[in-house]
Length: 111
Image (cartoon, rainbow, N blue to C red):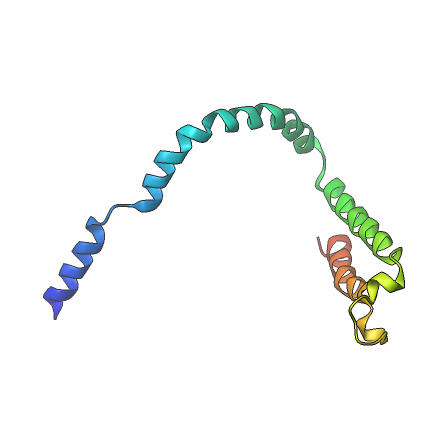
């Protein structure tokens, strides 16, 4: 029994590392693209790195607010499209509010 387990372990060790082979094959192809992206993102990385973390928190809350305002500007006919009735619990605007408010609370008060 022990010999079979040792043999199975040895067989798994001898298998080629597929992930490493894939990295070795793809990395040289993508290298020019990564160089271009790094040159574009480096100034932005430096600027964002100099900002306080509070700025990121408030930006996230503002984005959540923008999305909520946009959702609540959608017409009722569009919201209830395909719904069998116009029950209040089917209003996707309310569901978006219920889902988004906890995230806003977390960003504002727990971080």
